[in-house]
Image (cartoon, rainbow, N blue to C red):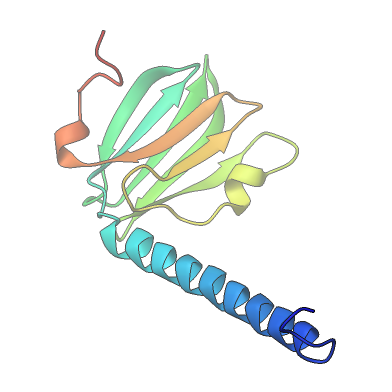
Length: 133
């Protein structure tokens, strides 16, 4: 005969479920704390079009950068108070315009219809290759 009676088995299972849930929550809180405390402030907003760099702008200066495709301005990037955001775009969905301002290293704003990526980099990342072969 089992040492657990029918009355104590569900209680033990419920207690184990609660301990498991608390363990998962604690792990998520720890991960979030580490992630948010180790993010570094970016130095530059690098603009890529079709994967090629078309400009790099310091976050320390307030700028309005028109991004052109030929003679047509497709997007307008604004850098203000150490943050970069897309002020306007010709794309129909306006996802890049609705995106929050970025300022931390490796944060990005992507405009898929225009094939534009704005990536925040640190001082050491400026001009360095993405990969080493």
